[in-house]
Length: 145
Image (cartoon, rainbow, N blue to C red; front, side, top):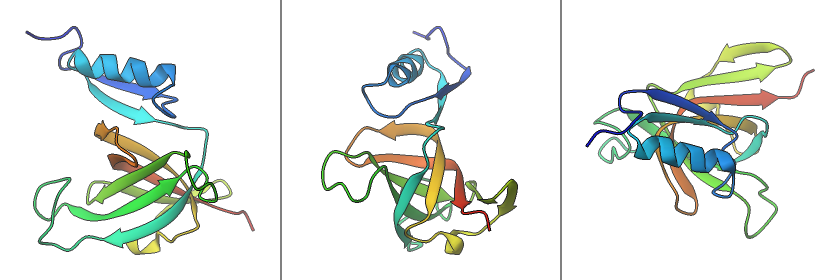
């Protein structure tokens, strides 16, 4: 049985947590067969951990695609309850740095704990704690000089 949205790609913005209306819309679209791209645009969050992936453990993508995983938190000072996302970075993930109005490509090694970032996801999002997803785009927001 195919769903109403089978073969369609749907962008859902405003997915901040499971309580948001956007989360329900994304879940229903996925249930109806759509490929769902999520965005929680509007809040830069703190990058709190950066870890490279050993090549022999390639979960989250086919062999050799996964570069590493970063942990992104809504409010790192809060000990419980804040949104945390474990985000897989692959060779297909676009990494950009914004300084003022300019966007520049960066590499995985340029991601550092303490940076403010926004991440856009592709594919399924595992609703665990922390949430688990694969990034299509990560933008690092640097203070304007």
